[in-house]
Amino acid sequence: MDRFIVHHRDRILGTLACFERVIFKGHLPMSHPTGLETFFSSWLGLKLKKFKEVAFHLAGRLKEHVQAVTQQAGRPYQYLDRLACEEDFGRQIAARDGVARGLICVFGAVEPVQAFRLAYGDGRPRLCSDWRKCLVHYFYLLDPEFGFMHVRRPTWVPFTMQVHVNGHDWLARRLSRLRLVFTRACCEQMIGPAFRSGTISANC
Image (cartoon, rainbow, N blue to C red; front, side, top):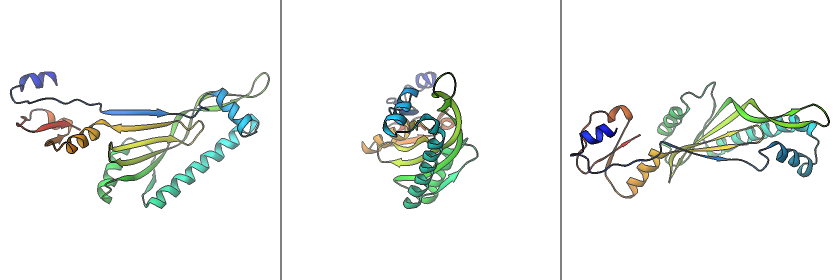
């Protein structure tokens, strides 16, 4: 890209840069074994041997809640065998249904996640970190500030969350609010075109 800028420097008024993806990660205070054990004993008043039963119950509650939310919003919920092109599916659904703001759809898929399991050994049972497969929900949205984005939330304890923001969508919305004229192009379209004066070309 630097060679391109140098080669066309007489036609370029300026350059813009942004992150392609920004990921925010969130977790509950019970996201480590000791915290979750305290939650079970002090807050729920349960013994650890009930962990798996309670975890399955909470996972079912989350699945029911997601399906109820999508139904109330009139948006589709779809289970996917794999998530190779889930972002493309989300954009296609938004375009098909004319979604301009809010929830687009929710995808569900079984994936490995960082979770907990009950371990037995000397003394009492304890919780330890482990990888396991569980149902993961992907909420795709159109936000007025950040544009096309999604939230990833596993249904298994400790319910970690990731918010994925598209930096190019955010930049495009900022430029539009500033009433700047720009052309948004895909990566393969960025090779070779001459930039016209007064036009900003942004990679999407």
